[in-house]
Length: 153
Image 1: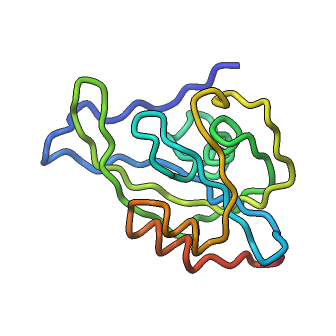
Image 2 (image 1 turned 120 degrees about the horizontal axis):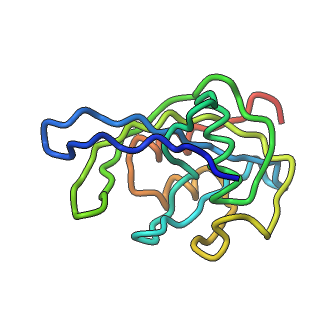
């Protein structure tokens, strides 16, 4: 199945507009409280949440859920509204950089699979919110992870 991911803006210079992305804060109940899934990025190997470009014909929440499946192999109920956002600088093809703002949607994981589209390109890791916050590089994302408490768990 092919999805029409919206490409980044053409200009990546210092004056370029901030590009919108979507991300999924995937969580499940754990023995000591909620656990959050992180994945490694394909380019740098840093720990991140599943995220990507909006998808034509899908809501932002649906696109975030699609990223969760493609990048982490998880499916579940995604919230219709984001719990917050964070910014980061994405390196694009050709060495250009683009500032992106990621709207982060909570996703209560109901199913985890080992056979998912990007399984050969990423590593998946479950951890407590405080541990996840310590592993990511973006301060605003770390704050979202550190303070995360699911609505009903």
